[in-house]
Length: 230
Image (tube, one colour):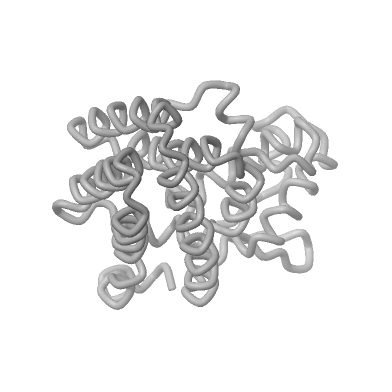
């Protein structure tokens, strides 16, 4: 589970604390699929739930609109959008480019101690997988990749990708319950850390590419299985 400090790392810095709390809460519901496409977001109900005025609610909704996760219509009607596969592909293109460089930098550094945080996260993620706790597994997946970006000193680039990842995150969430998927993710994470620790740049790149290619490769099957999300 994220600590308070870790949660802060995933909040958009441009929002005030109240708006960030609403944004983080609603976004989490969307990417976890608790809020499905076409779900209505009633601003008065959100304000009551968070005990806030309309101003931070508007800020949070505006940020979600910028990410393409919600759409607003006249009479303040706001709904969760469908998954945009083109957006997911663009975001994954950016993510692969950044994570390849992160892996390369860490492998070339030949400082395996930089991986201590990622190793701890992977151990926790393995436990979540054994418990079939998809929510915790997904959270720890984000923390794992954040820890690599942090070790490489490029946290701002992690945030750049994270701010665009709502659609690909939902695709991953639909794909994760497939038999063997969580075990595959854990194997990939282990392979990435092993290659980095060995200072093997080529193997690190191969492991990262393999890890990040799975969800998009499964898009046709995901759409066939869950057409209501697209």
